[in-house]
Image (cartoon, rainbow, N blue to C red; front, side, top):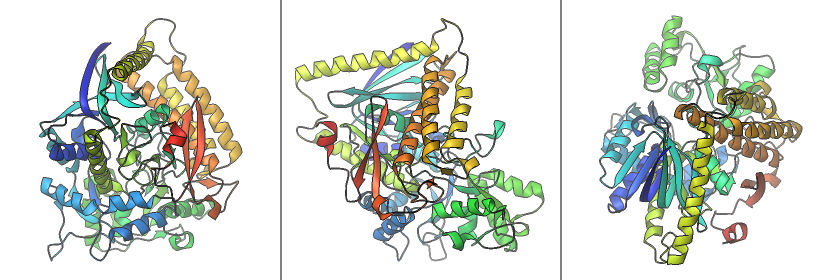
Amino acid sequence: MERERIVTDVLIIGGGTAGCYAALTIAKESPGTKVVIAEKANIIRSGCLAAGVNALNAYITPGQTAQDYVDYAKRDAAGIAREDLLLSMAEGVNRVTEHLEQLGLVILKDEYGAYAARGKRNIKINGENIKPLLAEAVKKQKNVTVINHVNITDYLLADGGIAGAVGFHVDERKAYVFLADAVLCATGGAAGLYRPNNPGFSRHKMWYPPFNTGAGYAMGIRAGAEMTTFEMRFIALRCKDTIAPTGTIAQGVGARQINAKGEVYETKYGITTSERVYGTAAENLAGRGPCYLHTEGISESQSEDLLKAYLNMAPSQTLKWIESGRLPHEQDVEIEGTEPYIVGGHTASGYWVDTDRRTTLPGLYAAGDVAGGCPQKYVTGALVEGELAAQAILADLGAAGSPLRRADEKRRRLREERIATETERYLGEYEAHLSSGGSPAMFTAEQLEEAMQKVMDNYAGGISTHYRYNERQLHIADDKILMLQKMTEKLHADDMDELLHVYELKERLLVCRVVIAHLAARKETRWHAFAENTDYPGQSDEWLKYVNSVYRDGKVKIRFRELTDTGKQERAEVYGG
């Protein structure tokens, strides 16, 4: 493979919401600092904002405070959330919203000229171009270089911290070696771990971007970073078949959840995010399905507003209404839960970070969906975390005696030797998969992916088991996922696209193992549906703690942290300084 070596001050992995805003922050506050963004797709339409959104779901509306948002998010997470992270995020969401408007985002206004609220914590926007606006602003910065279509696979470890990363071009037979004083992981969460709602050709019609494979998680796990709360999976309540959002209907027209008998059931089970999914699964199990959002009887103008709203973010739902010949006011909308995802923007899964979004590995920072402990951050929260991480990076790079600035010649030479060794190992793995020698593999990455999804669905609480699992099932799941991991070593790739799929599978399998370990470690059911443990069906105050883990010697090692932990404690104890 052709090789390219790139040296920069800051490497940002992932050009989505958080990554773009981190680059903008560095460009504004330190124009002389060199930044490289490595993006698997193209930043103009990459990440969760690719298709646009019609609301900003984290905004402090008049009469509300940042602490109110903290209280809401912690309550929705049943207590398992970092208040320090939530507060630092909530305090910045209005500021970044105003900046988005300055960049050209259309935010709807009420008759008084104020932002049009959609509830206590969100506002309405015309957001189909939100990602292009961010991307164009980034591309104007003279100190920021964007490299599209490069898939980062591993961090480079040296001198007790992160020294860069390696990856490959998704089209060309080319490998990249990035060396950086600081690395920000701003990739997405993990989709595709479980068997999805729709089979075959439509399997990628899902809630979360199918191209987010947990790469950032997997890199951190392999490198020994501490991860948190992977057992708090996210399951979205969506419109059946189209997997379109339901919040626009529920909040926009006040639609209630009803069963096939027309009975309102949402108040019976609770109205937190997880309880809405749980109630739907429970009603179907009890034979009272299918379940719906009750829109029949709303006004024709409300119905028309829904059609327009879904054109912004899920046009397939609008087309479904039109093709059926019955608009929202003429029929209820059938709903279902999705397969589980691991995503730190809605739940608290991800890297264990401090308030400045430093991870437990020196030189590595995390923001957005990969940063744990801070649920309900959504778009604006991801922007704030990108800003906070960027400011921490600049502070650390400029600090006297910073571990990121190593002047000692001997240490620098040893660091270079370690980097070279690490680089050759990873590039050798790429070449091994691309090698044409030997007999062809007996299976493909796609076949192993389907096997992985079946295992997770059957044994780790997927759709087919109504999100329920027990210890025996989790033990079986781990054994089978470990076997699939070993099988990936013999996968062959004819080209770079196939190599990409091989590594996406590897990432998902490793994340699966961490998810299984976390589900097994929390011996309670704190969140119905999100973690429905049939061996421990009740909630216990004894489990008001964080389930964290570190991956060592091929094993996921669980450790628990008390709710008072801030993320800045115990590093020396765990990582030997």
